[in-house]
Length: 112
Image 1 (tube, one colour):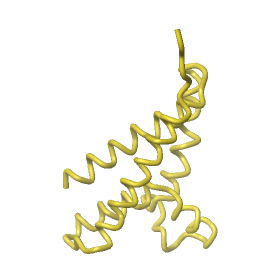
Image 2 (cartoon, rainbow, N blue to C red; image 1 turned 90 degrees about the vertical axis):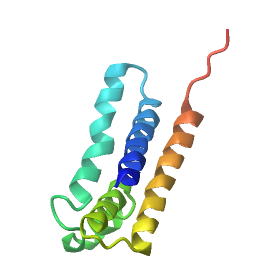
Image 3 (tube, rainbow, N blue to C red; image 1 turned 180 degrees about the horizontal axis):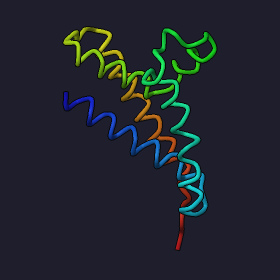
């Protein structure tokens, strides 16, 4: 579904802007990306299903937006688009909006 791809792309861009706002150079921004990306990739359910994770890791995965994006994608693949699908989409969109707002709030202002 195109909606998932668009919202995921917006989330990725927003997270990149948010993380790079804390860097002073481009090299630092590249170094921050594994800190933001690796926990999400490990805990989102691609490698190990989320229901098989230990309790603490499951709680952490519930705080990461990629987990909800993967869940929404799985629901589209299995043709079971329900209210849980729309809840996951809204959560991912909320994370994207929060990251955009956070990135905009942390940008350095330059005055001439």
